[in-house]
Length: 174
Image (tube, rainbow, N blue to C red):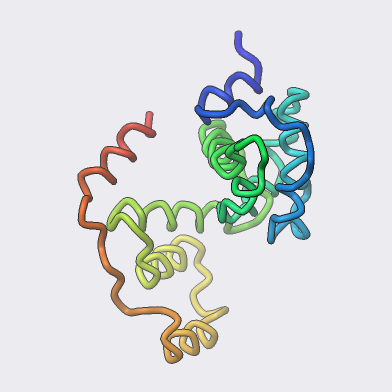
């Protein structure tokens, strides 16, 4: 029987998280560390200590924006953003509901947008999220303001190589 650490490392591929020597550069650069229950460095430590339930039930794995600032700062090239993806997918597989009410719905809308066009189609992702969450109007004024200022485009370009995108989703789904 494999340990939580071994499972996470296997799913991440690449540099194992044991390469982390807890310099905390990932945490220092993380733009969302202030909002996280456990900072990225602490999540790695918890995985190393086998604290699976605590990690998978934390809000931290859902708050990670996957901006990869942590990855670029890591002197040992530990892919913390990929680790957070693996943890989110593991939580979904184990049917663990996130603490944040609609964050999983946002995650699903985000992935559906990538799957359908190879990149984010913001209007379609927003519609998908709003339908899933049932929160139709809470930020409508802000959305219209962003649209009027050109921050959200009505149509997003599609990826030319959709075959590769489909292959990525096929290879990562069970």
